[in-house]
Image 1: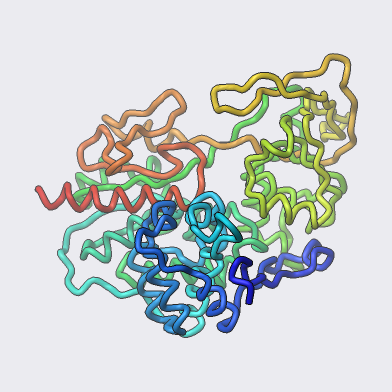
Image 2: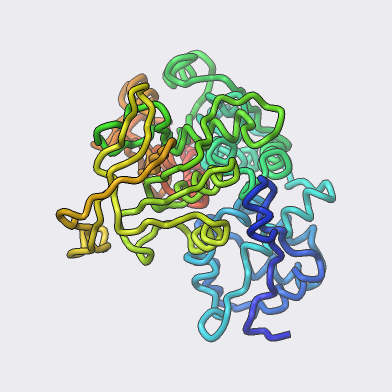
Length: 461
């Protein structure tokens, strides 16, 4: 075995997977996981842990995998993470834990994410659950939203002995893990539902179909229902559009809507009458992970798919793995291009887009080179579906119905990064509701920090 090279991970063949919604990556088996774990140097000053937003004891769990002690490896991970099977699949490990791995200096980093996934999947297959708190303290905390921030905060508080109830607006718990990430990247029943059940096994209660700000307000939860603290982890589900002509046409979706319909309404399963227009030729505008998810979903629903992105491939914000998989599956990348108008037929349906070519100019405030239009370079492309994947912002409903809760100009809730405390006493917030759209693991890190903040706050009361 070459210790400089990762143990390869089995995947579905591109031509096969592009026509189904089964998981792309098949993961390690026990022998492969132990072989990969043996590549870990078990560093005393583990840099990988510094790259993990939830501070998992990475050398600790990997050393247990190396010895075949998979249950102990799971319990080590579970001390820090409520969602290991999710993180092992969707975290950008290449820029976090694996990005700091010493092995990566002269060879390939240890496959930390794939090992985390293996451990979580092994535990699920063998009925292993995270350890509960030994004693309950009887103090009530409400958590708004059952996405990664909310589940993490709730799980950590439950381990501390708190009586936690999650309030979820949709009919299924899981937040963006359920509605925003496609089945082929994150299986809903096998993985997400099982992770939610693990959180419930800690004693967390989940009430679905409760829209905070309409069904009940935060002030009412605290005044009338005995909750001593509230964590807002409601995410950022309000889509952005370009503001160009034709965006109101039929056949134009936000990526959020397209993925939500496909995930929650089972558009990927035969026999489901799901009101979603798959399209024969689809344009996805944007270059992030959500754009890749929308494009790869449309491909599986039978479309020819073009990703239109105004910068070059080097500036694509999506994970390299997602871009690589999209290319393998036949997604067409129209880079350094941008729509200026969507074309609409006499029935009000989108029929294409007018595109202008771009070139890169000087760096903008984010450090990326700003795209500049090339005059006279416009052309038209046919499409019967256009998906806008330009980012999202928080829904203002919660902040508008909560007295004394400060928001910034982007309608994001203002909260202390260290502990999640907002301007309203007893109310904490974290994840996309505070930062705007970001990654699952960063939302989990914020939920974890807020759980500590809530515990410190209530310990002083």
